[in-house]
Length: 265
Image 1 (cartoon, helix red, strand yellow):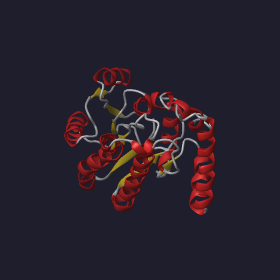
Image 2 (spheres, rainbow, N blue to C red; image 1 turned 30 degrees about the horizontal axis):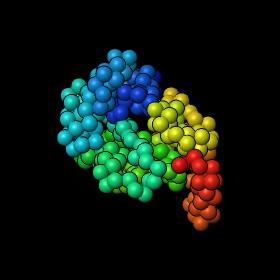
Image 3 (tube, rainbow, N blue to C red; image 1 turned 60 degrees about the horizontal axis):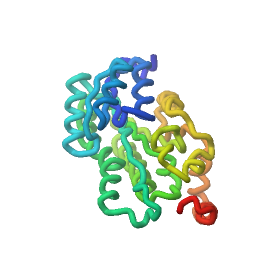
Image 4 (spheres, helix red, strand yellow; image 1 turned 45 degrees about the vertical axis):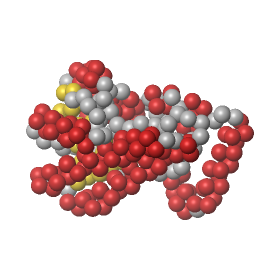
């Protein structure tokens, strides 16, 4: 049993499959009492049954949906100690990402960014009054680097990391621990739907969702902010920060190769 999870009340959004399911499963295995959230009631219930948790289906991105989830989870758990803001969506699926509709941009921002803001808005004041809590964002290496392909995904994942950083800076000294999980390719439906980008996203080996959950539980030991299931990302992130123009030039070369190969057509 992990001391940071044993007997804790844990909520995981988007937990019906993939990384969310792995996080919920691992938290339960470490002794946590888990609320499983997903848009799909059937998958939420299936995971809850498997881990001995409670399913609360619904939209964890809308203001009303977030409020209903937090109120329902608080009633079930007594207290939410850990909130895993895991639900996320990917790109528009079109060839020219620049032409992504405003409607899709709004949806991406709602799910990948505002869901975190809305949850923190309700949770943080309670945590400040009751001894703290842990807010975990499932972001992406795309939130640290540059995502070839989908502008909305890259931008919203950068924003989710930035919001997590802001939360840590603003409330970290007051008992609110914040973590951002930033993997590259993970064997989920999102990766399967990535089409020609699947090989690029799996360049440093596509991980199983359970390996991402392992990386997170390991990171609980020192409460580190950045959880990097692919260790290589740390080097890429450092290279991007120390010589941005060189990094961008390399990314442009990679984009050019993709353009010439016709993979994105």
